[in-house]
Length: 93
Image (cartoon, rainbow, N blue to C red):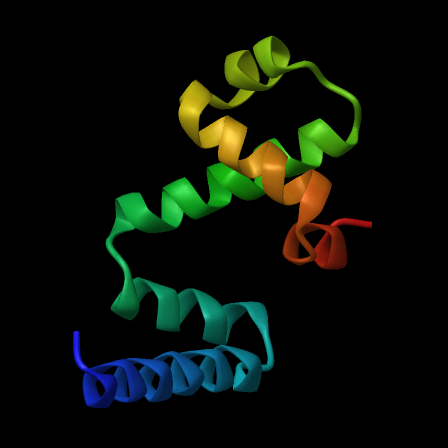
């Protein structure tokens, strides 16, 4: 990817983030995600958020997998983000 393509992609991502931030209620977000993502993609995002909540509640990997059906590879990534990232920790109190 050349520099111009990188710049366009960054601009597109910025637009996505601004659009998401502009939505003011659950119904707007639900409608937008239904248009933007497949049903499976929304399910997977919901699964990851739920897994992050369970990890923060102290559940083990085995318990989280049993409760969510999430793969161990995806759970590992979620766990890294819970421990070292900001996103989940900002939204999960």
